[in-house]
Amino acid sequence: MTTDRTAQWRPAPGPVACIGETMAALAPEPLAPLESAELLRLDVAGAESNVAMYLADHGVPVRWVSALGDDPFGRRVRGRIAARGVDTGGVRTDPDRPTGLLVKTPAADGTRVHYYRRGSAASALTPEVLHDAAVRTASVVHLTGITAALSPSCRALVTEALASATAERPYAVSFDVNHRPALWIDGSAPDVLHDLADRADITFVGLDEAQALWGGLADAAAVRKLLPGPRILVVKDGGRAATAFTGDGPCTVPTRPAEVVEPVGAGDAFAAGFLCGVLRGHDTVRALRLGHLTAGSALRVSGDHGPLPSPDRIAELLEATDEAWLTHPGAPDASGATATWRNLDTGRR
Image (cartoon, rainbow, N blue to C red; front, side):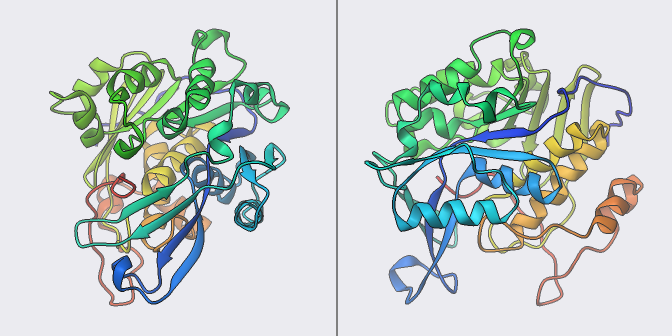
């Protein structure tokens, strides 16, 4: 582990605003291929609201800003997210457009997702959202590449949020590349996502994701050369490690072994844990560890959101030696075994 215990740039104190679509989600219960499933479980799914819920779990004041249809799915989504302690006052109800829907189908090579979100309420979001008080008074605004792919107006929203220089923004912008190839039918993803990612204050990207988008990137350092703009760049290397590049240089923290039920949502959880660490003034090592610990909570459940370790357990692991970080026993699954996981961003392709 490369150590980094020095001070670094941090956002101003204040709440986080997460902007983006959350959908109703259907998944087989128990987990099985969709075509052979007898029952479906109704849940909610959205990258930005996942981040918001995990931030709330960590005690960080957070708002989710979006739009939902005036329908049962929309009421379910709003209620579920609000119940986690997230402020949903910035969520608009659209009387003319529906809440988006996704359906998961687990398979041996990863979970596949079928989207039913075209023309959804959230796809009609515009840059006007940035003038909402829930956004203007935030310390950090969290966005993803998913929103940029939903519609021209959504892309304009993300572009405007990142249009001004970092020093001129009223808030810091956190951006998770979150490349979903199925949403980028026009082939513009590499150029658009590169431009957006390089303008953010804090950027998250998976190494394999960066390789698929931009090619020729052997390691995290190569990604940093491609994206020199962010004050903090976090490159997630699957189940191996995560590296944060700050003004003090690179800092790498390996991933702890974790049990895996389903990897969907782990990347969002990691972003929330890391952001929490930064906002609380943790050094980069501890912020990355908190990202890994939060991601592990998502890996252990079939939905996108799982319970965090106890506060005492988190504190213990944040202060652990490098050796203890990797070897201290984790919570076993039902079989008493733990497993490594391959990719923070495996899932919604």
